[in-house]
Image (cartoon, rainbow, N blue to C red; front, side, top):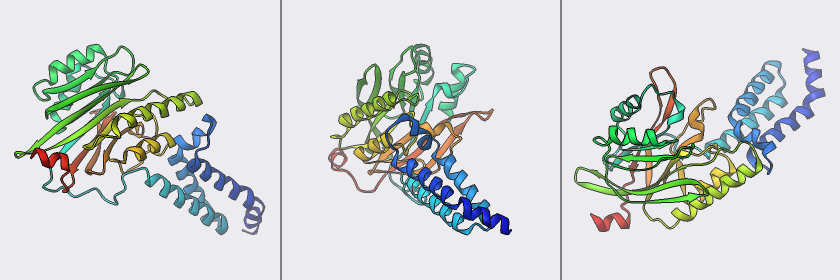
Length: 322
Protein backbone atom coordinates (compact mmCIF):
# COMPACT_ATOMS: atom_id res chain seq x y z
CA UNK A 1 0.00 0.00 0.00
CA UNK A 2 2.92 2.36 0.67
CA UNK A 3 4.15 1.76 -2.89
CA UNK A 4 0.71 2.61 -4.23
CA UNK A 5 0.57 5.74 -2.10
CA UNK A 6 4.02 6.79 -3.27
CA UNK A 7 2.92 6.34 -6.90
CA UNK A 8 -0.06 8.57 -6.17
CA UNK A 9 2.23 11.36 -4.98
CA UNK A 10 4.37 11.11 -8.11
CA UNK A 11 1.58 11.18 -10.69
CA UNK A 12 -0.86 13.37 -8.74
CA UNK A 13 -0.21 16.67 -10.51
CA UNK A 14 -0.04 15.26 -14.09
CA UNK A 15 -3.31 13.38 -13.56
CA UNK A 16 -5.01 16.41 -11.99
CA UNK A 17 -3.89 18.51 -14.95
CA UNK A 18 -5.23 15.88 -17.37
CA UNK A 19 -8.60 15.69 -15.60
CA UNK A 20 -9.03 19.46 -15.48
CA UNK A 21 -7.90 19.89 -19.09
CA UNK A 22 -10.33 17.24 -20.35
CA UNK A 23 -13.20 18.80 -18.42
CA UNK A 24 -12.34 22.28 -19.68
CA UNK A 25 -12.13 21.14 -23.33
CA UNK A 26 -15.58 19.53 -23.10
CA UNK A 27 -17.18 22.64 -21.61
CA UNK A 28 -15.32 25.46 -23.36
CA UNK A 29 -15.33 23.79 -26.81
CA UNK A 30 -12.45 25.75 -28.33
CA UNK A 31 -12.34 26.44 -32.06
CA UNK A 32 -10.88 23.67 -34.14
CA UNK A 33 -12.29 20.35 -35.31
CA UNK A 34 -9.43 18.51 -33.54
CA UNK A 35 -11.12 19.31 -30.23
CA UNK A 36 -14.51 17.94 -31.28
CA UNK A 37 -13.69 14.48 -29.98
CA UNK A 38 -14.18 15.91 -26.48
CA UNK A 39 -17.56 17.45 -27.36
CA UNK A 40 -18.96 14.54 -29.34
CA UNK A 41 -17.86 11.96 -26.76
CA UNK A 42 -18.54 13.98 -23.62
CA UNK A 43 -20.69 11.28 -22.01
CA UNK A 44 -18.05 8.61 -22.63
CA UNK A 45 -15.38 10.86 -21.09
CA UNK A 46 -17.65 11.46 -18.10
CA UNK A 47 -18.11 7.72 -17.57
CA UNK A 48 -14.37 7.18 -17.92
CA UNK A 49 -13.60 9.83 -15.29
CA UNK A 50 -16.23 8.31 -13.02
CA UNK A 51 -14.60 4.89 -13.38
CA UNK A 52 -11.21 6.43 -12.63
CA UNK A 53 -12.59 8.10 -9.49
CA UNK A 54 -13.89 4.75 -8.25
CA UNK A 55 -10.47 3.22 -8.89
CA UNK A 56 -8.87 6.02 -6.89
CA UNK A 57 -11.27 5.27 -4.06
CA UNK A 58 -10.20 1.62 -4.02
CA UNK A 59 -6.52 2.62 -4.09
CA UNK A 60 -7.16 5.27 -1.42
CA UNK A 61 -5.87 8.05 -3.65
CA UNK A 62 -8.20 10.46 -1.91
CA UNK A 63 -7.00 13.70 -3.47
CA UNK A 64 -7.30 12.30 -6.98
CA UNK A 65 -10.63 10.75 -6.08
CA UNK A 66 -12.11 14.08 -4.96
CA UNK A 67 -10.68 15.84 -8.01
CA UNK A 68 -12.18 13.25 -10.36
CA UNK A 69 -15.54 13.32 -8.59
CA UNK A 70 -15.49 17.12 -8.84
CA UNK A 71 -14.92 16.90 -12.60
CA UNK A 72 -17.77 14.40 -12.89
CA UNK A 73 -20.09 16.75 -11.02
CA UNK A 74 -19.18 19.71 -13.24
CA UNK A 75 -19.70 17.64 -16.39
CA UNK A 76 -23.04 16.32 -15.13
CA UNK A 77 -24.22 19.87 -14.54
CA UNK A 78 -23.00 20.94 -17.99
CA UNK A 79 -24.70 18.04 -19.79
CA UNK A 80 -27.90 18.39 -17.79
CA UNK A 81 -28.18 22.00 -18.92
CA UNK A 82 -28.61 20.69 -22.48
CA UNK A 83 -31.30 18.10 -21.67
CA UNK A 84 -34.85 18.58 -20.42
CA UNK A 85 -34.49 20.94 -17.42
CA UNK A 86 -37.28 19.41 -15.36
CA UNK A 87 -36.29 16.87 -12.65
CA UNK A 88 -39.22 14.69 -13.82
CA UNK A 89 -41.45 14.87 -16.85
CA UNK A 90 -44.55 17.02 -16.49
CA UNK A 91 -47.62 15.21 -15.20
CA UNK A 92 -50.31 14.72 -17.86
CA UNK A 93 -53.01 17.34 -17.44
CA UNK A 94 -56.30 18.39 -19.01
CA UNK A 95 -54.38 20.62 -21.39
CA UNK A 96 -54.31 19.84 -25.11
CA UNK A 97 -51.48 17.46 -25.89
CA UNK A 98 -49.96 15.88 -28.99
CA UNK A 99 -47.26 13.33 -29.81
CA UNK A 100 -44.37 13.94 -32.16
CA UNK A 101 -42.58 11.01 -33.82
CA UNK A 102 -39.13 11.85 -35.24
CA UNK A 103 -37.26 9.32 -37.40
CA UNK A 104 -34.73 8.94 -40.17
CA UNK A 105 -35.56 6.30 -42.78
CA UNK A 106 -31.93 5.18 -42.93
CA UNK A 107 -31.88 4.23 -39.24
CA UNK A 108 -33.35 0.84 -40.15
CA UNK A 109 -33.22 -1.51 -43.14
CA UNK A 110 -36.93 -1.67 -43.98
CA UNK A 111 -38.28 -4.80 -45.65
CA UNK A 112 -41.02 -2.84 -47.39
CA UNK A 113 -42.80 0.51 -47.47
CA UNK A 114 -45.68 -1.12 -45.62
CA UNK A 115 -43.44 -2.08 -42.71
CA UNK A 116 -42.76 1.58 -41.92
CA UNK A 117 -46.27 2.81 -42.67
CA UNK A 118 -47.82 0.11 -40.44
CA UNK A 119 -45.53 1.12 -37.57
CA UNK A 120 -46.49 4.79 -37.98
CA UNK A 121 -50.21 4.03 -38.18
CA UNK A 122 -50.03 1.84 -35.06
CA UNK A 123 -48.26 4.58 -33.16
CA UNK A 124 -50.25 7.21 -31.30
CA UNK A 125 -48.32 10.03 -32.97
CA UNK A 126 -50.13 13.16 -34.07
CA UNK A 127 -47.24 14.62 -36.06
CA UNK A 128 -44.52 12.61 -37.79
CA UNK A 129 -41.24 14.05 -39.02
CA UNK A 130 -39.15 11.94 -41.42
CA UNK A 131 -35.70 12.59 -42.87
CA UNK A 132 -33.87 11.17 -45.91
CA UNK A 133 -37.09 10.90 -47.90
CA UNK A 134 -36.48 9.88 -51.52
CA UNK A 135 -39.10 10.19 -54.30
CA UNK A 136 -40.05 6.50 -54.09
CA UNK A 137 -40.51 6.67 -50.30
CA UNK A 138 -42.49 9.89 -50.66
CA UNK A 139 -44.90 8.39 -53.20
CA UNK A 140 -45.42 5.23 -51.12
CA UNK A 141 -45.91 6.99 -47.77
CA UNK A 142 -48.28 9.56 -49.24
CA UNK A 143 -50.50 6.74 -50.47
CA UNK A 144 -50.21 4.49 -47.40
CA UNK A 145 -50.62 7.22 -44.76
CA UNK A 146 -53.26 9.44 -46.37
CA UNK A 147 -56.16 7.96 -44.40
CA UNK A 148 -54.47 8.14 -40.98
CA UNK A 149 -52.46 11.30 -41.62
CA UNK A 150 -54.48 13.33 -44.13
CA UNK A 151 -52.33 16.47 -43.85
CA UNK A 152 -48.76 16.49 -45.06
CA UNK A 153 -45.94 18.39 -46.69
CA UNK A 154 -42.89 16.79 -48.25
CA UNK A 155 -39.75 17.72 -50.15
CA UNK A 156 -38.30 14.46 -51.50
CA UNK A 157 -34.80 14.46 -52.96
CA UNK A 158 -32.52 11.86 -54.50
CA UNK A 159 -29.84 12.85 -51.97
CA UNK A 160 -29.91 12.48 -48.18
CA UNK A 161 -31.72 15.72 -47.30
CA UNK A 162 -35.32 14.93 -48.29
CA UNK A 163 -37.97 15.79 -45.68
CA UNK A 164 -41.60 14.99 -44.95
CA UNK A 165 -44.06 15.90 -42.19
CA UNK A 166 -47.39 14.08 -41.74
CA UNK A 167 -50.15 15.23 -39.39
CA UNK A 168 -53.50 14.02 -38.10
CA UNK A 169 -54.44 17.67 -37.51
CA UNK A 170 -54.92 20.40 -40.12
CA UNK A 171 -51.78 22.15 -41.29
CA UNK A 172 -53.02 25.72 -41.67
CA UNK A 173 -49.99 27.09 -43.47
CA UNK A 174 -46.65 25.83 -44.74
CA UNK A 175 -43.37 27.34 -45.74
CA UNK A 176 -40.13 25.96 -47.15
CA UNK A 177 -36.78 27.68 -47.04
CA UNK A 178 -33.34 26.50 -48.08
CA UNK A 179 -29.83 26.63 -46.71
CA UNK A 180 -27.79 26.17 -49.86
CA UNK A 181 -29.49 23.07 -51.35
CA UNK A 182 -30.82 21.76 -48.05
CA UNK A 183 -34.58 22.23 -47.48
CA UNK A 184 -36.31 23.12 -44.23
CA UNK A 185 -40.05 22.76 -43.66
CA UNK A 186 -42.13 25.00 -41.43
CA UNK A 187 -45.85 24.83 -40.79
CA UNK A 188 -48.65 25.79 -38.43
CA UNK A 189 -50.73 22.92 -37.03
CA UNK A 190 -54.16 23.34 -35.46
CA UNK A 191 -54.26 20.75 -32.67
CA UNK A 192 -57.81 19.95 -31.55
CA UNK A 193 -59.09 18.03 -28.54
CA UNK A 194 -62.77 17.93 -27.44
CA UNK A 195 -63.75 21.03 -29.43
CA UNK A 196 -60.79 22.97 -28.03
CA UNK A 197 -57.84 23.86 -30.15
CA UNK A 198 -54.41 25.42 -30.01
CA UNK A 199 -51.91 26.20 -32.74
CA UNK A 200 -48.37 24.87 -32.83
CA UNK A 201 -45.70 25.92 -35.28
CA UNK A 202 -43.09 23.38 -36.27
CA UNK A 203 -39.82 23.42 -38.14
CA UNK A 204 -38.31 20.22 -39.53
CA UNK A 205 -34.72 20.08 -40.72
CA UNK A 206 -31.84 17.85 -41.69
CA UNK A 207 -28.52 19.58 -41.18
CA UNK A 208 -25.50 18.45 -43.17
CA UNK A 209 -23.12 15.98 -41.48
CA UNK A 210 -20.12 17.75 -40.01
CA UNK A 211 -17.45 15.21 -41.04
CA UNK A 212 -15.35 16.63 -38.20
CA UNK A 213 -14.04 19.56 -40.24
CA UNK A 214 -13.92 23.26 -39.38
CA UNK A 215 -15.78 24.20 -42.58
CA UNK A 216 -18.59 21.75 -41.83
CA UNK A 217 -19.13 23.18 -38.35
CA UNK A 218 -19.21 26.68 -39.82
CA UNK A 219 -21.86 25.54 -42.32
CA UNK A 220 -23.83 23.97 -39.47
CA UNK A 221 -23.92 27.26 -37.56
CA UNK A 222 -24.93 29.12 -40.73
CA UNK A 223 -27.81 26.67 -41.16
CA UNK A 224 -28.94 27.23 -37.58
CA UNK A 225 -28.71 31.00 -38.06
CA UNK A 226 -31.04 30.74 -41.06
CA UNK A 227 -33.64 28.82 -39.05
CA UNK A 228 -33.35 31.34 -36.21
CA UNK A 229 -33.97 34.23 -38.61
CA UNK A 230 -37.05 32.46 -40.00
CA UNK A 231 -38.51 31.53 -36.60
CA UNK A 232 -37.49 34.25 -34.15
CA UNK A 233 -40.46 36.56 -34.88
CA UNK A 234 -43.03 33.77 -34.57
CA UNK A 235 -45.26 34.03 -31.51
CA UNK A 236 -46.87 30.58 -31.55
CA UNK A 237 -45.73 27.58 -29.55
CA UNK A 238 -42.77 26.14 -31.46
CA UNK A 239 -41.54 22.59 -31.94
CA UNK A 240 -38.27 21.91 -33.75
CA UNK A 241 -37.40 18.38 -34.77
CA UNK A 242 -35.10 16.58 -37.14
CA UNK A 243 -31.71 14.97 -37.65
CA UNK A 244 -29.40 17.74 -36.47
CA UNK A 245 -26.13 15.80 -36.83
CA UNK A 246 -24.74 17.22 -33.61
CA UNK A 247 -25.14 16.52 -29.91
CA UNK A 248 -27.44 18.67 -27.78
CA UNK A 249 -24.55 20.23 -25.83
CA UNK A 250 -22.46 21.36 -28.80
CA UNK A 251 -21.86 25.10 -29.05
CA UNK A 252 -23.77 25.24 -32.34
CA UNK A 253 -26.81 23.49 -30.89
CA UNK A 254 -26.81 25.57 -27.71
CA UNK A 255 -26.63 28.69 -29.86
CA UNK A 256 -29.69 27.46 -31.79
CA UNK A 257 -31.78 26.54 -28.75
CA UNK A 258 -30.82 29.62 -26.72
CA UNK A 259 -31.67 32.03 -29.53
CA UNK A 260 -35.12 30.47 -30.01
CA UNK A 261 -35.77 29.74 -26.32
CA UNK A 262 -36.12 26.01 -26.92
CA UNK A 263 -35.89 23.15 -24.43
CA UNK A 264 -34.86 19.59 -25.11
CA UNK A 265 -37.66 17.03 -24.76
CA UNK A 266 -35.08 14.37 -23.89
CA UNK A 267 -33.81 13.93 -20.33
CA UNK A 268 -31.39 11.03 -20.76
CA UNK A 269 -28.04 11.21 -22.55
CA UNK A 270 -27.36 7.71 -23.86
CA UNK A 271 -24.00 7.85 -25.69
CA UNK A 272 -24.77 4.63 -27.57
CA UNK A 273 -28.07 5.87 -28.98
CA UNK A 274 -28.66 6.99 -32.57
CA UNK A 275 -31.03 9.51 -31.05
CA UNK A 276 -28.08 11.50 -29.75
CA UNK A 277 -28.11 13.28 -33.14
CA UNK A 278 -31.90 13.34 -33.48
CA UNK A 279 -33.81 15.80 -31.34
CA UNK A 280 -37.25 17.13 -30.51
CA UNK A 281 -37.16 20.62 -29.01
CA UNK A 282 -40.07 22.71 -27.74
CA UNK A 283 -40.63 26.32 -26.71
CA UNK A 284 -41.59 27.59 -23.26
CA UNK A 285 -45.29 27.43 -24.18
CA UNK A 286 -45.08 23.63 -24.15
CA UNK A 287 -43.90 20.99 -21.71
CA UNK A 288 -42.91 17.38 -22.20
CA UNK A 289 -44.90 14.72 -20.35
CA UNK A 290 -43.29 11.64 -21.90
CA UNK A 291 -40.35 10.66 -24.08
CA UNK A 292 -39.56 7.30 -25.68
CA UNK A 293 -37.02 5.74 -27.99
CA UNK A 294 -38.78 3.62 -30.61
CA UNK A 295 -37.28 0.26 -31.60
CA UNK A 296 -38.05 -2.23 -34.35
CA UNK A 297 -38.93 -5.85 -33.63
CA UNK A 298 -35.29 -6.88 -34.05
CA UNK A 299 -34.04 -4.17 -31.70
CA UNK A 300 -32.91 -1.50 -34.17
CA UNK A 301 -33.43 2.03 -32.96
CA UNK A 302 -35.86 3.69 -35.36
CA UNK A 303 -36.50 7.10 -33.87
CA UNK A 304 -37.74 9.08 -30.91
CA UNK A 305 -41.19 10.16 -29.75
CA UNK A 306 -42.20 12.93 -27.37
CA UNK A 307 -45.57 13.76 -25.83
CA UNK A 308 -45.94 17.52 -25.53
CA UNK A 309 -48.74 19.46 -23.89
CA UNK A 310 -49.65 23.12 -23.90
CA UNK A 311 -49.15 24.92 -20.64
CA UNK A 312 -52.25 26.33 -19.00
CA UNK A 313 -51.42 29.91 -19.94
CA UNK A 314 -53.27 30.61 -23.17
CA UNK A 315 -51.33 32.65 -25.66
CA UNK A 316 -52.91 35.81 -26.98
CA UNK A 317 -53.00 34.50 -30.56
CA UNK A 318 -54.87 31.36 -29.55
CA UNK A 319 -57.25 33.21 -27.22
CA UNK A 320 -58.45 35.35 -30.11
CA UNK A 321 -59.33 32.24 -32.12
CA UNK A 322 -61.26 30.43 -29.38
